[in-house]
Length: 339
Image (tube, rainbow, N blue to C red):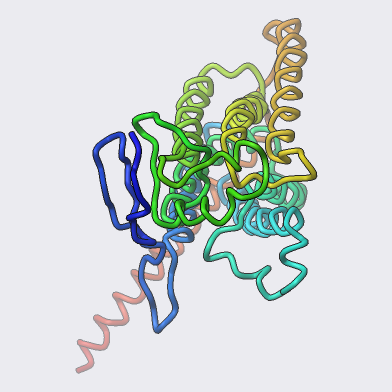
């Protein structure tokens, strides 16, 4: 179904194939003391928070002390944000080099998921070494957390009217005033597909495709987690799953990070998915040959000792808090008696 004219306001989104002619979608969520807070940041933060809560709920099942792991999580989040921005800026250095202040302006988007994963892993691994947290079982948990965060976080692109693809007549195709204007401004140059784009047709909602793929991936990994054969299996499966989906979805996008004529994210997706598939086969075969000799970290003496120490520490803290509350109550009673 076609839209016959450019009749959408800047913040109006439409799904013509579904008969939805106009939905107002603002990028700004609210403002505090004159500071505008974007939905993009709110949604990404919500995805991170849900991922963290899920991860913490799984720690003991994988033999990890949550108190030690929380430091890794905090460091990983910081590393992920810095890495995501750094990756995006480096891929667009010709633009950002003209005004270095814009490097720190992320409210309107500009975070690359591959940079985020690389940054989170680098910082996370370092802190794992410092805090004596076993890396592979933590990566298994993190992989499911990544998919939660990505599945939810992609909706930040919806509120920014970005991460869309080429024209489509599929029923779920979308458009907006901003998208139509982007097509008008950019279709005069670029690839043949981009030149042929027209603002009077809907486009692929690529953010939606990736969100659904990631949430489905979380369900798959959570199912496999109950049947995993070795520590690290879920993380390798995550790399394969995400890379497989991204390699197709990236081919539909009009705003890909480019290195010459190469879509950087699509190339990385294909290479990472291929490497993960090989690793799944090689490691899986090796573990299978071991029969029942493989020992999960959660079953090791080290894990049991650290968890036992964590339980003792928690019990001591509760007892200390209980005594403090009891002392405060007695002091209050003494004061009333004196009065």
